[in-house]
Length: 120
Image (cartoon, rainbow, N blue to C red; front, side):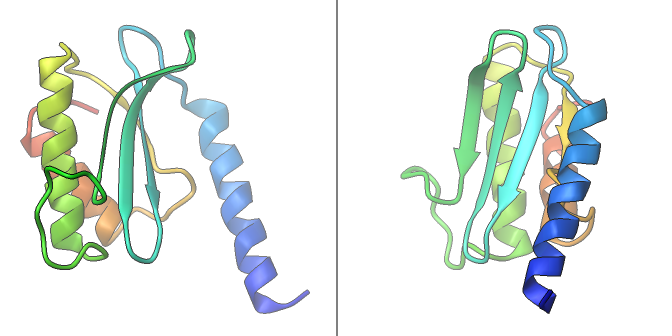
């Protein structure tokens, strides 16, 4: 097995392990993130009904930033998702990092969402 396939398999295992313990309810929905090389995406999901309540990404039209694949852009997305969640009446969420390690852009998004008023 080559190096890239091994890394992808490890990330899938981490994602499954996290999702086994984290699930979203109407009172405490799940804040799920995804990061690619160039963009960052976040959505708040109610797993019981299978619905996405709010979402934010670096590809949204209202978000203006220079580079989209850095920690500053991730922090902007964290603030945006926290503002949208407050508008939808959500205060507490369960954080689902989707197998990504908690550092860099993931940590920047989480810290900005906490600063914006979300509790997790």
